[in-house]
Image 1 (cartoon, helix red, strand yellow):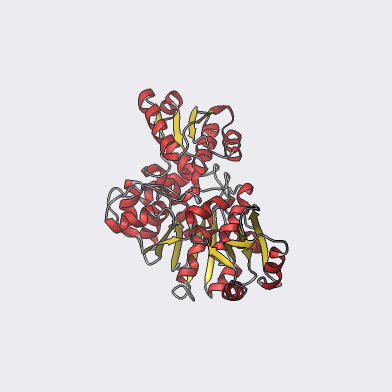
Image 2 (cartoon, one colour):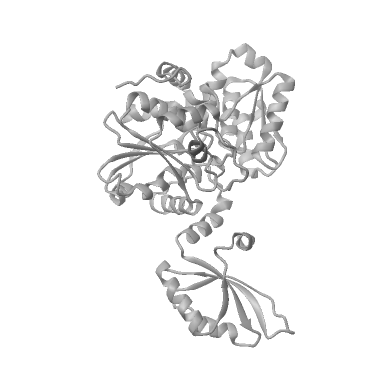
Length: 422
């Protein structure tokens, strides 16, 4: 069944054209039934594996479709420009090399070297990387200013109809690979390019499928915009889930999402970290934080999706190994298995030994300890991080601390102080 949409929505005909442009350029990524998730949620859960895409992300679809849709002679003469610290930059770089056109890619000076090297690898001599500014927002301003002054072609990461049509080919593939009824599709949301593309296609060809957008709790740009009925720019966001953390969603993306969404869900960053670790440990799947967003939302719909057919788009697998410790830390905090305290220790020998013997159980582990002895005082503060094997043991830990008259301050919920620790 095909539904008619307003003119500013990507048409199925244009999405088909995008699919043709992308043939022999991208991988048709698999749609895999995940047995562990299906068993956990008593549903048929399928993962669309865009982490197996040629640049390990769906972003190549929109970038290549946009660039290829412009007159070749024009784009060869002018060149293209983009601003990105991640997957969009890689998609543009790959497209430039493939089409043999010049590209200029602006990235924050804080971008990890691993990401810079991947952009260089995909773009080779066809791209120039400009490192400037500390945030994506400042870099984006520089890129747009350069485009305006030099009459270059800007490749927006999401707020462009050709970008949206390219991302929509993910939805086209899903319905070709599973031509049966799909009850729910969970799609990660950053600027809104993927969900407005895939959602538009599903809205027309699978109108009974409930489309659920999932974004980080620390960057709820689409959720807040939908609540206010207009695009809202956030002042501050948590950039941990960097592939889906934007201050402002696209205007076109917002219009489409306002029409097609069944629900929007924000997911805590710690929950996403738990999902990343579970995917790796149980499935040997390497997912980046934004890539794990859609799967992370399933817990919040567990009753609703029971017995249903579900598709989650695993949107990317460009994970930086240097972030592993932070991912584990955030996961433990979310799961309530890691707890930090400022403990006032008597400044005498044996005080720490008494704490370990009388307060900690055999399964508790001290994973962080910072103490500096001050000879002029009776007590000295120590910051202690304790990892529990079971979150339900936390109450018992507090009881033992109080029983042994330990003077402490619990600091997990103090973000300003705690941020120093991680």
